[in-house]
Image (cartoon, rainbow, N blue to C red; front, side):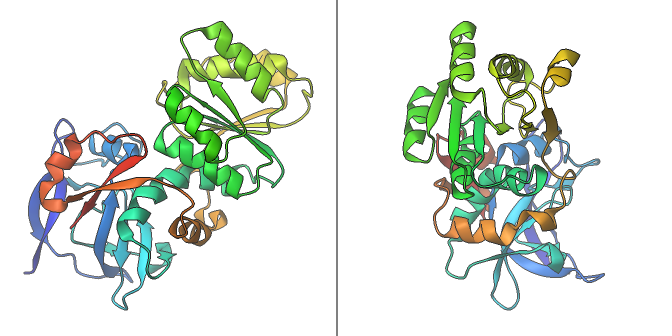
Length: 317
């Protein structure tokens, strides 16, 4: 029996451990591919800790939720595998789930950037059917996914992008990456509310990577300042760093054309998201996330690494 190395989640309280496991055998139309790079995103860590909605239902389980892979014919592809894992030397995939990656692209760069850009791309392409010329507010714009959202929105034709975040140095840097206006998030709630009201009162789409009480504060400030109450405001929850619940009064919904939705695995038809377009855009340098490359043999060290702003840990077998 052929064996391979894999990162296995054996306890939600520990990092994945390197283990030798059997190489899976192709079946039911599945294809065996070589894994080239796996990005360790917040979602990947959350799934391995039992804190994400894609977390495995039973253990042990293979870690990882996506990967850049190489097919038998040499073609590169990106694949999302929530619930089945990806952090191994080889994995089984359904060919229809493979997203082509341009030849010559750096697998580590694609692995570092794809997950970061995926949330905003999918939300704008397949969740709210964003139209070029609309305006976008990104809340939590100083993280990798949020800053990628600024670039993605501009790439897709946003006429105006407002970036909101706490890291002031990183926030200021977003002006060179596509942001037109900034909302500094501070402990001064009154000042933050004024900043939201000034910059985002007539926004069309909100990509919210924070949620929780900060989202409540932002909603109240924006809706209170809005003058065109019948103009649709699509508020898309794509992350929960500020909490997983909000309290929203019914008046906000009755008095405004507010549509709240979530974007993630299971909420969109991925065929509508034009992922090959995203892959090509990333390969050409759309999103600047630096890969911090770690070999699979050091997976436990990789799990302990704290990414710096603009960096993402990438494991290579």
